[in-house]
Length: 152
Image 1: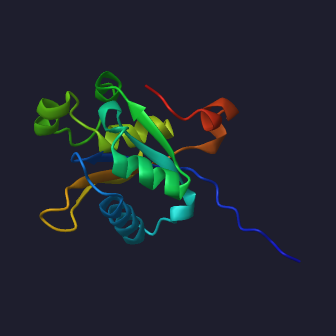
Image 2: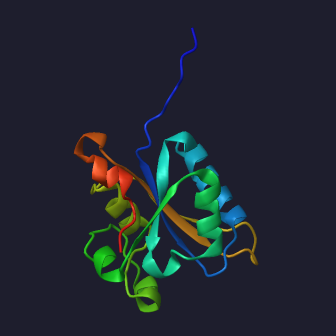
């Protein structure tokens, strides 16, 4: 008898990145953090970010190749989320004090992070990525939420 092991896709990776960051850097950042925290890549539903980063080629391509959703949020929405370590520098640059943590929490519709923000860079020229991971509660998600993940 063949038994399929289907993992529920409950994890949302919030991501902030420098303009032009490659899908390779994004991949290594997510893979590294998931390995460190013993999280299965198969349980990732998608990435969440700031609205102005939603068209970054590296993000779009990585989500497409991974079969993941890409959610995006306006700065006002991200600012409405309480985070432990807001950044004044980030706020000055993109009008929100948190991208990775706030986006992960918004996408997962929770207020608990599994992984606080982690900064990643392959080398000095590759661009930086910051990620955070939150887990949604499948019992609090409607079919509409799961079918229509993109938010503005």
